[in-house]
Image (cartoon, rainbow, N blue to C red):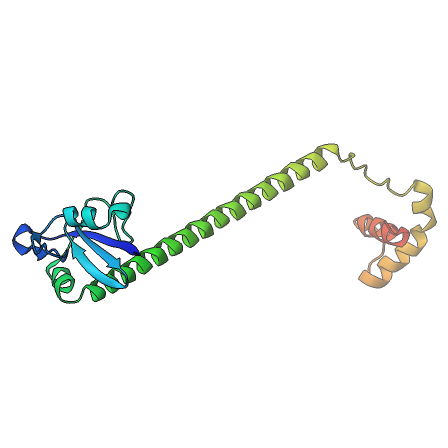
Length: 192
């Protein structure tokens, strides 16, 4: 005997459904058990369920829902009476949708965790880069300015520097006020 508890439901007291256990026919409204037994669906009150499905009753968790029983809407109650298979199909669809929602939520949480991990890694890289830069700045040897040309070097290119100033600017480099141009030309000639 293969039996599977599919759902435990309830309806309003005024809208009782008939227990389908052989010889029962009582109206039930609380803890209505929907069972697939040897390929056929049946609706049973709690006492009949316990009596007919002894091995199943004490340990069974319904496939759809759980706890004291889902209160059916008027439409669902009508399906329970007229087309129990369609009601179970609806429950399965709801179950699949809940599984899909849970999967999507898990994916979204995973995506958010990954974004947070990448943000932390980026912040750590930036912190390390700042730390390295500060260390390099502290440990870099002080830059010593390159020494300027010696007076002898300047004297050796002075005549050529004056000639360049005369050609470029059309001024007399020996007159007052042009000495800065001559010195710039001397440095240029010396490559400094």
